[in-house]
Image (cartoon, rainbow, N blue to C red; front, side, top):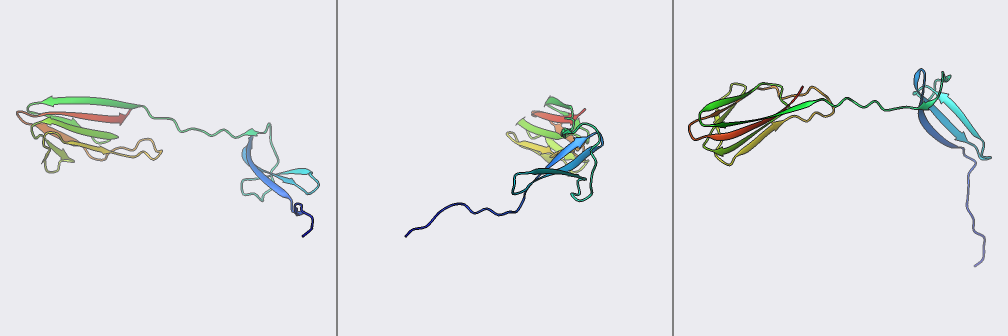
Length: 156
């Protein structure tokens, strides 16, 4: 069997897109390369159809990073009778029981005992949004023989 081999090309133009910025903000630049290799840039608004005239120096747009919130951490240990209160708005609360059966009450609800060896954590997933916190206050109460720690984080 005989024949020739080669590649098949079409006369369709090649198009590439890039989001750029100038003094007025972001715009879309479309580069079209035709079958002869000629490149033709076309600038539009981000909608891709409305013509745009460049104003000032053209640069690659810089992503604006969201500021990272400052987070304060606290650790409180309670031995014997006493209460550790955590106000609403904490990002995380961890309760570790070393001895006894201290209780936890959330938002003034019923006190629930936690036996020695228990650990519980409540937290929020920021999901990129600063300012998110637990909506409820916590009260951790120990009795004689209790030994526990409460760890919290909170935006400051």
